[in-house]
Amino acid sequence: MASFIAGELMGAIEQGHYKPGTRLVEAEIAQRFGVSRAPVREALRMLMKDDLVMRRPRRGTVVTELSAAEVSEMYEVRSALYAAVVRLFVRRASDGEVAGYAVWRQHINDLAADATVTPARFVDATQAASIYVVERCGNARLQAGFRKMTRQSYRYYAEMAHGTVAHRRELACLATAMLEAMQARDAEAASMLAWRISESNHAAALVAIAAQEKPG
Image (cartoon, rainbow, N blue to C red; front, top):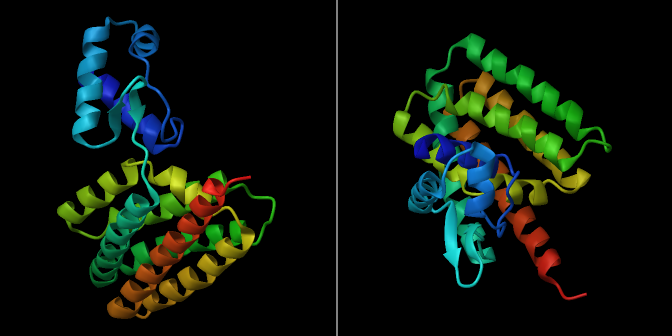
């Protein structure tokens, strides 16, 4: 039961339902799942091992909060992973799989052109497109590393990064160029563009964090 609860909580954190700093109250979670507190405590210990939650004095267990420096480190790793994933995808994917990514790309470009689209909806699409590529890169270790990075409140910071229409449209241009490199089977060019996409998100996230922390 503890593993099941941990999986459910992990999914909620990954999807942004529990934001960084949110308290995870044992009694409330136990009531939700109809169990005693013992399996809930075990589930929270499992999540602590993956750095998804942490203990805070006088607050109990909370979803892990990252400093600006830690967010920067997260993006540095993600950028390297995404570049490696895209390089392998270009080398190993079938023409049909590349065409499948093109469908995702067109959908995201359409969203980027629509100023009424929310950051959450845009992130839904970009994460799905990234997962499409990750699942077809043919390297289980890279896949595991990318998934772990995505779990660690990435979505929360991604929504901050994608908060402006201008940034989304910039990403759409970079990603369209990446698709063209994929179609040309230029693995190195596609990989470099993947890195640029992730680093653009990195910079936008830090700007959003700084604005949020600014007094007044």
